[in-house]
Image (cartoon, rainbow, N blue to C red; front, side, top):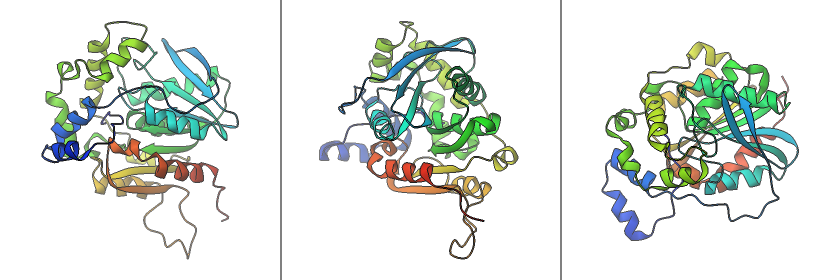
Amino acid sequence: MKNHRIFSNSHNAETRKTQSLSLPVLTLYLLLTIHLSGSAFAQQKPVTGYAPVNGLKIYYEIHGEGEPVVLLHGAFMAISDDNWSVLINELAKTRKVIAVEMQGHGRTADIKRDITYENLSDDVAGLLDYLKIERADIVGYSLGAGTAMMCAIRHPEKVRKVVSISHPIRRDGWVKEANDFWTNFNVEMMKGTPAETEREKLNPVHGSFPAFFNHIKAAAMRPWDFGADKFKVTKAPMFFIFGDADGVRIEHIAEMYSLKGGGHIHGDMMPRSESRLAIIPNTTHVTLMNRMAIIIPMIGDFLNAEPQKK
């Protein structure tokens, strides 16, 4: 579970600077150069609220009208992140978008409970119950993608389709460098970064970032496995989106897609899997969020697709 957000387009000098960095250092560099701000896109004022779910007061926003889709951010992110706002605004043109700030993120206070995919997926299910939404599509990035897939495992009746952007189904699905990164990653490295300062502005519990950081680090380092057997029998079609250099092993990507019926079919001769796979070229875990012009139309096409005739 790598937990990053967008970073600004780099000038040539900045590009040269990053080219010499190793993967862990580059990852941290990108994380520290990200910035949060409101979206530049005009939009109607959303419906906002706090849902009392599982000991949390989960902050949510509802944008647009239509079939419901839940959006789940990555770790250290919030609804107001630039490229996340772009995704919200585009999907809200035709759908009811329920954007969520998960445990400890943004305007949702942290609680004394482990941040696990099971807990977070139960929170999403509880939020849907609170909003009286029986079933929804779920789109997630990184931590949110893992939560979206876990929702399909634990709460299949509530999930129609899943879009999972850059996340494995086991901790060893990440490349070794991605997992090793967390060992020496500490809260002091986040001092003064937008991940800390913007959360401090939004979160109702001021000064809580160090404890929240430790919660996220523990979640990243804890052994976890969704279970291939459980994942294989999920009924919700899934659209897996990865970068070709985003830290998830290519063998693991193939395994995930295969478990959902893909990768072994000649689509001109037989029905295809209802699930899909996209690998975006020249793209990292962080820069996937800069590829919205490519990703958004694919998400829309997947969510709008009718089941194939058997």
